[in-house]
Image (cartoon, rainbow, N blue to C red; front, side, top):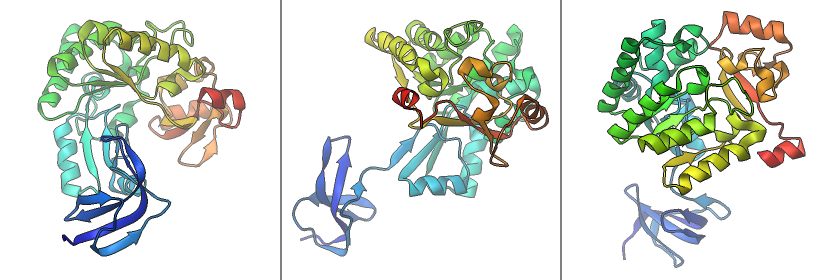
Length: 339
């Protein structure tokens, strides 16, 4: 009889691939599952994990925490792969090289970044493959403007080169440049379709939330999937649609039923985090998402933003600083139902 390195007994084994969800013993040898079942398994070491869940490592598709300390915390939560896909970075080669040289406690990967490419072309941002550079420029109006046809072509070239270098898809935070030309978004989706990779979109507002938007955020994603054939992933669908999430999901369901590839994700909590300079946190636009300044907590101090004057000051002096955005009140029963 094989003697395994370690056996975990009494744990609830959950394996989505096989549909398993029951109490079993599970053995590990040389870092690989070597046996499992209901009978006793002989091993050099036995650990009773009654009341615990044993499952494959979680894959976090939407992880901006790409530093060692942040990934250690994720490992403690059972995450074994953390991917930066929504925002992305450019060039991914530098991001991969930096992560490899520093070492990472879990697996990592990156999408290329439409926003970072625009920042390089329109705002002179450093092409350093660092998410912090993107955050620093996130609230700057310069990258949110309309590029010339030549600039737009170069933006697409930067993205295309990054895909060839190993980017896992294209991050498109179009919600941070909400007045950008929808035709450009379709060009990015078409590029993704040709390359056979997904896009990961932080959507524009829904028309019902902001009638001035050039296109409804959910419809834009659905249309891109239908017209280009690209796999369009709709990031944190609930934080960008708020109380209108059923409307957004209905659009997704219709396009899925028609055969297009659209997937979604949702926060399991009522808050998100972003840079205080984000376009949708303009004091004149907060009401469109049913927010006030008190909905925002300034991360460096841990304090809620008291008034318009304070928010304007922070946006002017430190636009890349992080805030927590409470988009749904978890203590309120109606909004909790929405969540």
